[in-house]
Image 1 (cartoon, rainbow, N blue to C red):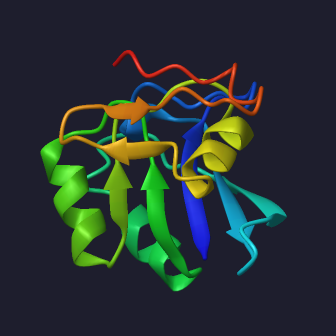
Image 2 (image 1 turned 135 degrees about the vertical axis):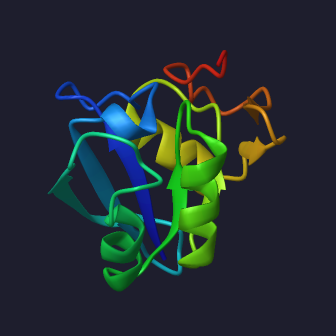
Length: 128
């Protein structure tokens, strides 16, 4: 599985999909372990009008963990076979770890993290 996250230069989930500096693309094994992280430059601007959905889909991405993202960009990504989980924030790698642990889901407006009793996940907040 490959998961893309729009990020800032400090590897934080960018609050605006169309204005992110980079995309971090996480390769996740069948054992739900992150095995590789690739950085992909972003063409800044309107996410629904860029070709990023096709580029990410061609790379095998099937999930986008995003902060703020518009409906047009969601539709373009969905048409390329990429599911969008909205409202995420914090360190990109921690967000991915929480997602593959089943702690993040998309409610249509924002993502929700359930309390973890394993002592992890302290860097993730969903407040968008």
